[in-house]
Image (cartoon, rainbow, N blue to C red; front, side, top):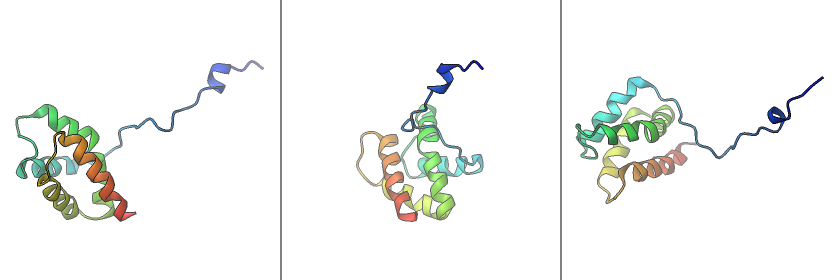
Amino acid sequence: MIVDLKLCNRTENKYDEQPQEYAPKYENKFTEWLIDYGVVSAHDHELIEQFKLEVYPLYQQLADRATLDTVEKHISYVAKQHYKHPVGYFKKAAKDYLKRFI
């Protein structure tokens, strides 16, 4: 029996973050709230895409553990804060907030 050692020694880095799935049905709501609360411009498609990739999966988890209303309240609260990099700031804030719902 021949065994390919490359396959045996292959390990996945558990620290690599993989994009998580989120329900597309909430995507429009999340985007609407980010625009309504002045976080992003409706014309800034690049920034909206970054939010979709990095923050929306966290918002999906929050909606699953709590409610959509909770997500909207979180966005409205964080939007009032001072930040330089909105995607990173919202991502960290969402991760921190999710810990309350474990």
